[in-house]
Image (tube, rainbow, N blue to C red; front, side, top):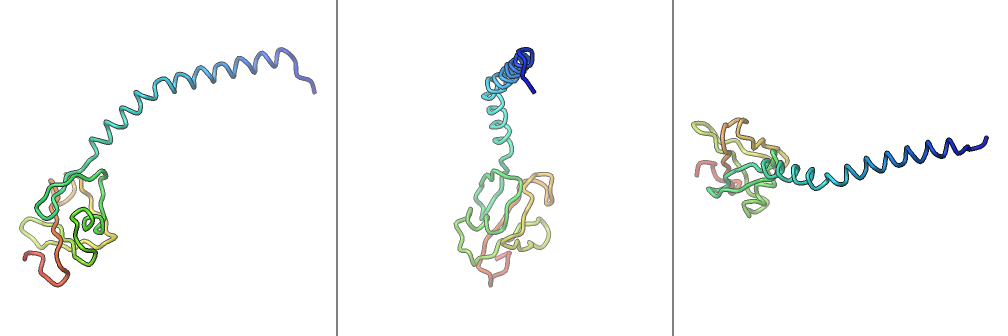
Length: 121
């Protein structure tokens, strides 16, 4: 089967169109990147660990990450402070939703402690 000049012309015009599209995408890349970076900055969640405010780059955080953020030893316990209630312990692999609409509402507060002490001490 042969390849005619008409086929070659069609192929070249398709390649040229693809190249134009690629150049258009590449030329707007800085704008897209800037938009994603702005959205990333908006996604930082605020939290308070041991009475010190922090920002976390994701909506969810695990118990082990709290310990690292607080500079606490690995064997310590982490509790989320719940106004007017018990402060449940957060396991090392347990995820907590830091968004303000998740319970308890607002900025989440956490404490780290030795595993043998009470959360309210």
